[in-house]
Length: 168
Image 1 (cartoon, rainbow, N blue to C red):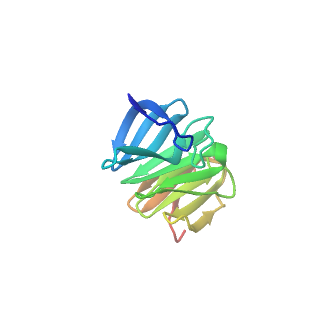
Image 2 (cartoon, rainbow, N blue to C red; image 1 turned 45 degrees about the vertical axis):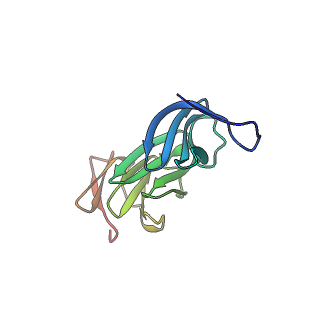
Image 3 (cartoon, one colour; image 1 turned 90 degrees about the horizontal axis):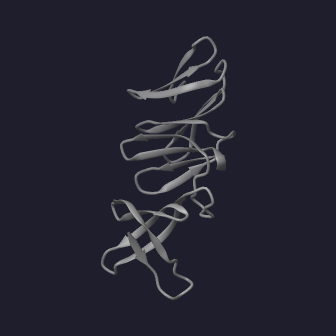
């Protein structure tokens, strides 16, 4: 259990259970959800950095109704359907991208990640630049995967499968 706070209104009182410590960040289970804090060991302080997972969070980086999550090495990709965006941890910071339609599925790869909504697939680099759009899939995409530099999608139209890379 961690409790930190003071008497000034500019500081956020913290009371929660530490669920993870990773590379200078402390993740706490609080009344708001899971919140990320930067830890300054020298000054023994925690600073809330606006990343929070919780239904009623007002944080700018909150996740609402996540529909899928995928990890590749130190990269994390979240289909954040409630906010109609994809949140990406690229190994250094969280960023987000807003595809043309609300994301349903995501798949993280080595150099890029795939976002799916219905029958459309969007291939993004980890700089969140759109590399390629695939809108010729028959039916809706049910599942996606990644192997050896290529993404694969399976649709509900007769079991059709598709290989997707930057040139496809």
